[in-house]
Every structure is written in structure tokens, then in C-alpha cells.
Length: 120
Ligand SMILES: [Mg+2]
Image 1: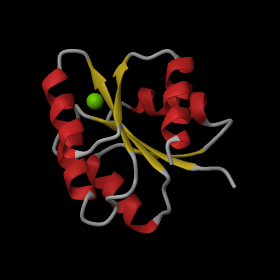
Image 2 (image 1 turned 90 degrees about the vertical axis):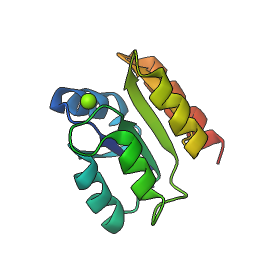
Image 3 (image 1 turned 60 degrees about the horizontal axis):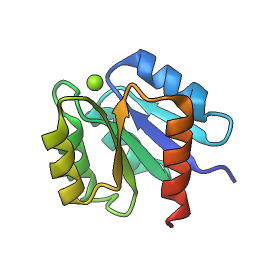
Image 4 (image 1 turned 180 degrees about the vertical axis):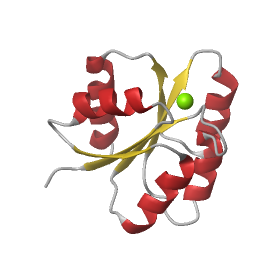
């Protein structure tokens, strides 16, 4: 069975692009906000989360912290624009698996996701 990845980003274009890149190999679920992501994580089996940091209302860090209550084992790769290094460092300290800077090349994303799954 294909592994399931939940992609969370407030920018719909990023969701569409990421799904296009990963859709061949993985089953890709999408969420446009932290709130929607948490709702999906409560009812769906998800093997990995790609989580945008910069989102309105609930940002990626806050979403990640809330995930710990019920999806603590799910690996998370943060997606971040440059200039948010501190957020990323904090996220890694909180236990996030990894991060990827936007904009990323398709091969970079594919490689990073595969590496993360290989660790398990
Ligand atoms: Mg964003």
C-alpha cells in the first residue's frame, strides 16, 4: 500500500505543486490550514506530514505542538521560506524530523521524503 502524506500549506498553489511532485509514489492528502490538518490527522492514517510554518491563525509550529497530543509518532518535515531559521531551529528542538526550504526543486522534495521514510 502507498504511504500517505499530509501536506499542509495556506498557499493552494504550493499544495497543488507538492501533490503533483509526490502523487506518483505516495497517496497525498491536502490541508489549507493548521486546523484542517489537525482534523484530518484525527480521522485519517497518515505516515508523514509536510508542514508549512508560515500560515495565518495557526502557524506550523503551533500545529506541530498540538499534533503531539494524538499524533506524536508521525514524522514531520517543515516547509519554510528563507528568513525563518529561528522557527526551524525551535521546531527541530521540539522534535520535528527535518525541514525543507521553499522554493524547493522536485527532486529535492522526493529525496528528502524518501530519506525520512528510510529511517523508519
Ligand atoms: Mg505559508
